[in-house]
Image (tube, rainbow, N blue to C red; front, top):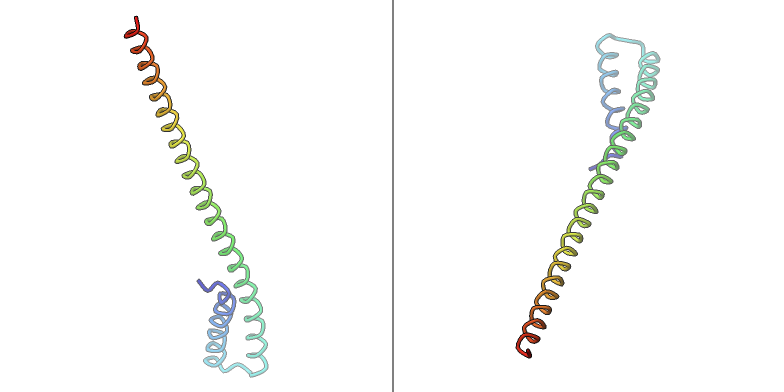
Length: 107
């Protein structure tokens, strides 16, 4: 996404509207240029603020997505660890049963 063009796009849109208004109302050229300059400055500032807000929101969204991935990875590792522990316990139980059977056959 081309976020860097937001201030220019907003300023140019506002400048176009200002030019059209000045042409339709037959304002003096000097007055039109002053109005255009002020409009461009104000809306460029607004565009930079909008750009900053959008970048902040996108950054926060990225951080949340990364956190969700980390949590999912952690949960998966915990699940695998529990499965491994259960497998080890089952193997130990089987080993104990084999040992008990061997003791019984010896007696």
